[in-house]
Every structure is written in C-alpha cells, then in structure tokens.
Image (cartoon, rainbow, N blue to C red):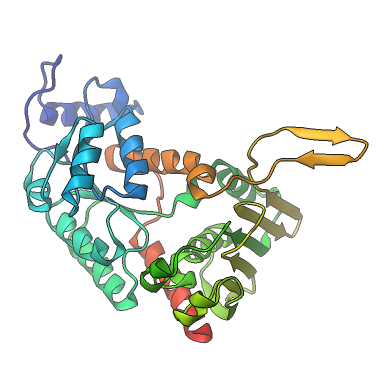
Length: 359
C-alpha cells in the first residue's frame, strides 16, 4: 500500500519498513496506530459542499492526512487546499504520485465513474460519494473494472454509519426482535432543492431514495427482488415539469417474503425527518428523529420538545466522521464489511425499477 517515499520525521524507518512491522503487529492483534508515524496520504477530488465535510474529516483523523486537492474550479480547489495547508493538484499528477495512498471522489456525479476507473488503474484505494453513476450500464462497467483492478473501495452510503442506525442493526443481529419481517423507512427533506439541481440529479429515486434502498437491504439482510412504486409532484409543480416527482412511496419484498415500505418527500415543514421501524417475530425496534436539543418543556398547556435537526449536514455529522474512520480501517487494517460497488449497483437497480414505474 505504501510505496517508496521520504522517511517520516522522528523515525528511523522507511514506510516499507513500517508495513513490515505492521504485518507482524497485526498477527498479534495490535493496532496500526501503535506504530508511530504511519498516515494514509489522501488526495481529494472535489472542493464543493460535500468535499468540505470530507476534507475536515480526513485532516482531523489521527491516521490520515490530506495530501492534496483536485478540482476543475481552480479557485475553489486552491481555497480548500490553503485552508488545510496542502497542495492544489492536477488529477494526473495525483494519480501518478507514488506517495498518494488513497483518493476521495467527492466531485460531480457525472465524472465519478471515470475517476474511479483511473484511480483503480493507478492502484489507489478509493472512497467515492454516491452514486457511482446514474447509468446502470455504466455502473456495471465500473464493477467489472474493479474486478480486473482490485483496490480497496468504499461507497459513501453514510447512513449505515449513523450511531442510531448502527445500534438498531446491532440489536437486530443480536436477535432482540427475532427474525425481521417488516421494515418501514420515512425520509423527508425540509425543502425541495432548486429545479436546476433536479434536472441533473437523476431524480428522486436515484438521488434521494437510493440511501433508503441501501439501508433497507442492510437491515433486511436479503436482496429486495420485487418493487412497486408510486410517485407524485405535490411540493413544486416545476419538479413535475422537469420530469421528476417530489413525493413517493415504494413497497419492496424479498424472495422469502420480508416486506419494506419507504416514504420520501421533498417537504417536511418541521425539519429533516429520518425515522426507521423494524418489526420482527419477537418485537419491534425504532430509530426516532435526532432533535435540535434534548430540552423538553412541560407546562399546564402541554409538553413541548424541539424539532428534528434541519438537514443532512447536521443530522449525519457523526455518520460522516464514522464512515471515514471505517474507510481508514478498511485500507490500513483490512477491517470491516463496508458498503462497496456491489451495494451501489444493487441500490441503483432498485432505483431504476422504481423510476421506470413512475416516470
């Protein structure tokens, strides 16, 4: 993983020596961080809103360092690079640099697939924002490319790393509610994005509900093989005019008969609505909304609590940090079953089927 590069300050070992030591240590179940000085060097593609989140998490993690920023908008890329005292780079230079261990693809959706293939061919570990691509055929091509050029790959289905959903999954796997029979997912945004975004997003099923398809597969533990979708444009008529829906309900089932219901809306006046319920043979488990605060006011007039957090940046801040830690452990330790290209392909297939039924 670590090619020849300058020796790390304060050590007498080269990175190759570190790798040899690491292999020996892991045989004795010791952690990589016990070896002083090893950091995964990361170049990030993309300096937009989501890129700023990832840059902060990379730079703050004790086992990774932000080695450079790549962005077609030079001003944005240089500004983010300057913020973290790192380099602004061209993609070809980043992929050709032997000191780069991994890339984060947080660029525009329409370049994800090409960047994945070039990074894999260069032997870099890859963390990619969803989706891999909006085209099912193109994603299948990327999956095939990664089979030929195997590198550590993680797709950023960040909701799997939310502490509440992880606790729910842990209890399900421990048998707390018996066998899973039904999963209900409610996901509603506080407001619709601009119609200009809608036109390039791939639509509600590929852009928004794809997270819920992934969570449903993860919680059920089986492939969802039947899809029935309904959708309407109730929030903004311009969304309907752009060829999309803003309100949708999808029912799914597995070959064994397990059922899933997903409800999405581009409107929730009370905040970012993110709830899950799983019903099993021995009981039920729920993950409720995360509120703006835990303060509850009780008076003669009634009991009042806070609204849900406003949107995904606030609601899933912990999940973004946790997913980056997961990628670091995947690359450096070989740990964990992380969401990968196959999960991206499976969720996109469900989105394609739902979209075909509605649009």
